[in-house]
Every structure is written in C-alpha cells, then in structure tokens.
Length: 512
Image (cartoon, rainbow, N blue to C red; front, side, top):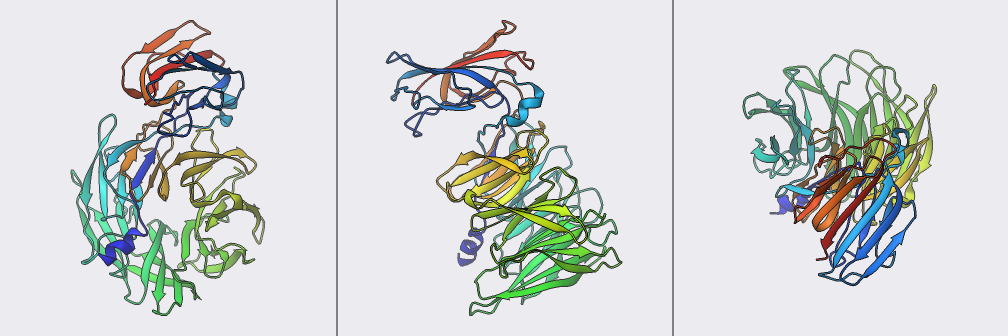
C-alpha cells in the first residue's frame, strides 16, 4: 500500500478536454456554478440577449466581447426557470480567426488513469492512450464517441505501475513500442511491440542500477545513426536528506543499450530533480540535450558535437538563481525558425527566447504571475501559432496562453476543478484536425472531448429543449428540438456559413 501511495503522488486520473473552435454558446445553471455564462468563440459578437420567460426578465448587451455573463447583465434565474439565450454575430474572415479562443467540453472514456502518452499501437489509424498508472494502454475502438479497451503491460515484480512511460519505435520496425521507468525495481524497461490484433508486447531491460532510481525519461536519436536512443534522469537517496542527480543517455545498439553518464549534481533538497529533454536547439541538424536542474537553479543545455559517438558540451541558458526549472517544453514560440523554451518552477514560469548567435544566447521573459505548472505546447485554436497549456494551482484546473505572435499571450481558462491536475497532453485524439487535451486529477474519471472546428459548434451547460441556428445573410434556418442534449453543432445540423455571414443562435432550456 505504501508503494501505491508513493506512485499515486506522481500520477492522477485523466481528463481529455475538447477544443471547440466555432461560435459557441454556453449556459450554466446557477445552482451548479456562480453565474450563467455565455461565450462566442469564433463569432464576432454584435449583440447578446438573455430572457427568463418564467419571470419576464429580459437583459441585453451590444458589447463585442467574445465572453459574457447573463447574470452580470442583470438576468435573475432560479431552479425551474425557463431561460433563452440568443447571440448575434458575424463569422470572422479567416485572417481574424487568430483572435478566437476555443471553448472546452468533457466526456468520460475510462474510470481512472494517469501518467500518459499517445501513439497508434495497433496501427489502425487512430491514436491510443498509454498510461503509466498500472502500466497499461487504452485501445481506441471505432465509434462516435470512441470507446477504449484497457490492456495491461508486463512490469517488474512488485511494481504497481511505472513512474513515467513514453511511446517510441525503439527497434525501427514501424510499430510504436513502450518504455517505462520503475522506481522500486530501479530499472528502465522496454516493451517491444510484436504486432497482432491487438498487439502483444515483449519486455526487455534497458538499464538497472539499484543505487540509482530512474524517474524521468525522454527519447530521440542522439548519435545520428537513425535509431531511437533514450535520455534519463536518475536519483540516489542517501536516507538523510541529501540527493544526488544523474543525467545519462542510453545508446541504442540494437541488441543492447550502452549507458553514457553526462552530468551529476547534488542537493540537500528532498526529491530535487533534473528534467531532461531532446531537441536540436542550435539548428545544426543533430539533437542536443536540455536539462532543468532545480537543485542548482539552472537551465542547461548540452551541445552535441556531431562526432561518433557524440560528445556533449555543457552550456548555460540561465544561472542567476531565480528559477528552479522542474518542467519545460521546447518549441518555436515566435516562429522565427529556432527553438525557444518555456519552463516553470513552483508556479513561476518564464520563456527563454532563442536569439541564435555563436555562442547562442537567450532572452528571458518572465510569466511569474500565472501560477502555472507543467507547461506543454500545442496549437489549440488552429491559427498556426503554438500556444502554451499548463495546470494551475492558483485556480485549480487547466489554463492556456493564446499565442498572439511576437511572444505576446492572452490568458484563458480551459477548465476549473476541485482537484489538483497533472498533465496535460495535447493530442488530436478523435482525428478531426483540432488539438485536444488529455490531463488528470485525483478524484475524477478519464474523459474525452469531441473536438470541433466547424462554425456553429457550441455547448449548452445544462440540458436544452432545443436550438435554432439562422444565417441572417442567406435566410437559411436549421433547428434541433431533441430535448436533454447539452452539446449541439449548427454546421453539423446543416447550416451553411461563409466568412462575413451574420449568424443568430438561440438556445432554450430549464435551469436545474
């Protein structure tokens, strides 16, 4: 039981949030939330009207905001009241879609799980989910929404699950394999995908050292020979508070892995860590190594010299003692052709802008006020610019930074929950071209969101009695009168829209 509690501290049940790009309408019961909310992602709002037919109250606004609140406009509503919310706006031109923020919705796909990655393990064309929790993968089964079947993977004796797991084709056969780190066995294990329907896996040990517990792991071709190597952070605990950290890469030689130690640090801070990453930071065609050493408060990178085998020279990105970078993500955030880094520690975050040059230099942009952890990068609003998603402990849940270009960002909320979150993971789980999110909490089931990019997709936070979608520019009207639904899609209902069209959406329901 003690082992399971320790692993549970690193992992929690999973969430999958939908990114809805389209003009959207959200109505939340005041008994379930503090207010009746509305949003119009994807629509240049020209007017909002909220009516309570049970009391005769009508409120309206001509503000052009994409987010609005019926209660703040003066609407009074109680349980059982019949409420209609109507929004009128214009479909934006494609060039203005960059200012559109998506909305998010959730559906359940599995009872619990966390510590995840995504890959098409059965090669059927859709991504499956890998979970470190219980060391298992979820096979995505066709359907709308899809369902998932759990398959357990072999793990060392005495382990309840992996600390971390990733998916990578380790043997070059075109099938994604699984690699996991196991704390109590002090080992890195490779599960080779043998194919089949469903695929079976065979376990091999990559590295085992009883004195050093492996935690984080990353993958990439570090020696330029065309196969996948591994990068790990391992920790030694001496039992009296001193921890030593080691960063090493494990050279894939086909039949075996050879371990090359790179870096060691020590700290009297319990569970201090080194976060590893593999990326071509200097753009010279070979993969370098990123490392956030929170024990020495430094952001490091190791330059690959391209030799065979490669040597790695330690370089400093940040060494001012102001941030202990325990999590980071690397991406070209300003679209200037080189890789930037966003890192966080205990809720403080910053961007290291890659300025290039020889030696390479970085400009630091602080995002300390966000209260965010575990940043990841993905294009949530499909505007071609990478956005930043992170879990928030200031406001429990997920939040994201919309990238407006030139490293300017607008803060949005994805979802607020009553529990701390891990993750998130950006992935197009339903294959519709939008970036969805997978994350986890400690008290909720695994959920999935149907991502939509269609104009007219919207979410009604309580059960609706019907929706009307009208294109005021063409006169076309479509209606859906199916009671009890919470999510509708005007375009899927048959509404034809073009940039510049004026659209009216009206939804009615009973406040719960």
